[in-house]
Picture 1: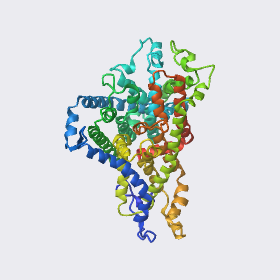
Picture 2 (picture 1 turned 30 degrees about the vertical axis):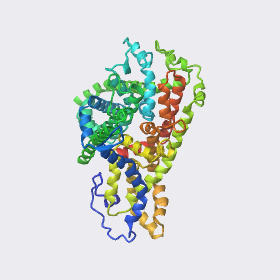
Picture 3 (picture 1 turned 120 degrees about the vertical axis):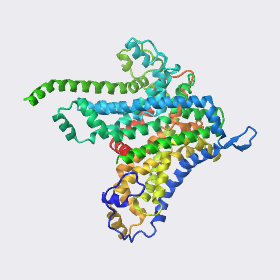
Picture 4 (picture 1 turned 90 degrees about the horizontal axis):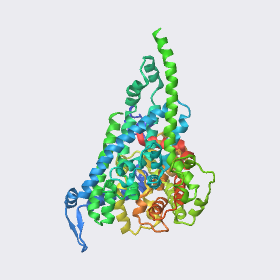
Length: 312
Length: 287
């Protein structure tokens, strides 16, 4: 702990306790900056060129418009204004918003309830838990392909519905069900992943808290809300934010299964950017959309850092 | 007296609760298993039998008495085998080169104190504030100008610098006692020696965790390989699989066999390194 606190950078996100160490003389570090820079250089170049530069390029390009004749013209906020009045973009924002509002609370709540379930002592709990975690190995594109067969009219999903006497559903081909169908296949691979964080959080709670609560006669349900829930607030907040970011970037299932349809009902922002850039060939406006997406994600992640900091 | 009463009353209820918990745990676990299990069984069945046992559901939906490996053998006649091989190649190169780049960077941040370290650290933090998929389209545009599309170099490059992996390794490196480094330095070990002989051997778990991150990033990649406009020689597994799905006449047996390979390879790796995986996930996640 002392080592960490003496070395902790001022910008570290973790709050450090303890006073700085007394060691002042460092005879071995005459030119630490140069040596450190040599070690850091490959990664810094990679991150600047491959992560930060494209964001800057997108911002720059979004201020121009390339005409068919090949001329490039500065239009300022023109592309952004175009987007604001574009019905496809408006629809994409609406769909993304609806998707975000629905999928994130649902996934986090499910992950929390499952984490509670699988931290209870019960026969075979570890085995069943690992079955929930297994799908995190499935790449999103593969999940989409598997579920495309499950969702077929004669597929597995309708076979299960039939078992309960429910008539066959159209799933991906219905504007009312397509978005929900995509949420299901994403949750299949996502919930287990987020559950792992929450299980770690629940396991960190000292067992004595529950013993004390039991002695006081608090019911299991009461213990869940007064002990478990408040004490995993931190991992919960993290999971909610990280999940929100990853769900903002959903692309493969839309591109593979629905191409944004039917009737634009699954036209999420990432897919809208993709079609604008490559199908419509309007790269400058697509870049404006990229900038908007990046700003939204940075804002969300900034909230995440604040949440984690303030609770330290 | 009252306590005793409560105790006797609770015992049968607790049994009911336990049984219910075990039941719910099993049902949920099986529900999550079903899509993967069904894919697995279908990968062992001829493609034209995929939909044979669905109406109505029966035990044969989820089991087959005549498993065949034909579908897996048939993979080799398609582009899928090539694509999966490409995915493996890209992921392995990314792990090796990426680990070298990320570990040296983490060492630079953890072992030295210098002016501007905060700035360096914030570049790394900022780089993982911007999700890769979000900037994939402008980056693809840049790569097209640099003639990197349809090259393995272009496919591998974005996976190499990984802010999360650097962050994870740095956290581990910070815990290595400074005295150890100073003693080694006094004995005449150079900084590269300190990195190779002290930091790396002491951080094997973190290196495995970071390696897993780099691997999964490439293995699950979809947007980027799609944007790089890969031809038959450079296509990766997930893209080839989704192309197959889009065809008019799909051999579902082969489709499921390819899906299973694309799932089982990362699954085996994650399960093999489970401990490190969970450790890496929780270090970068919550701390």
